[in-house]
Image (cartoon, rainbow, N blue to C red; front, side):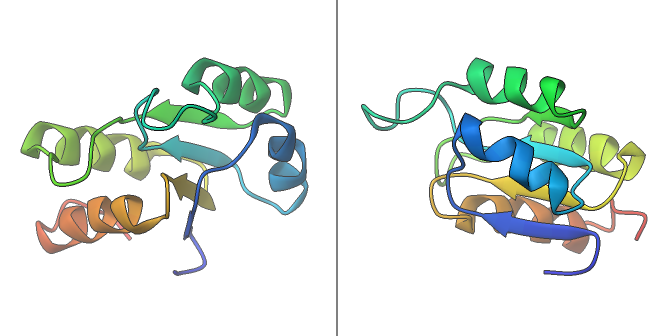
Length: 110
């Protein structure tokens, strides 16, 4: 974690307002719908983010299935995003891997 990025396990739509109050400006979801039965839907989290005034991006991928196109899409969005950014998936590991991959490919501005 840095001052511009933090990683989290799955968040719930009702948590988004508090996330905004903590100072986050952008949410990035890396968890596809349907991985678990009681998981919140991407669209519900996106709506909560809009209502809270947060930027939102879904770059959804299953563990071990990250593509170069997704890394490049993430880097482009991240570089243009207001910081700090909160990235999340089931445990936070997938999001961290995406960030680290983009950093290793020298795609991030910070």
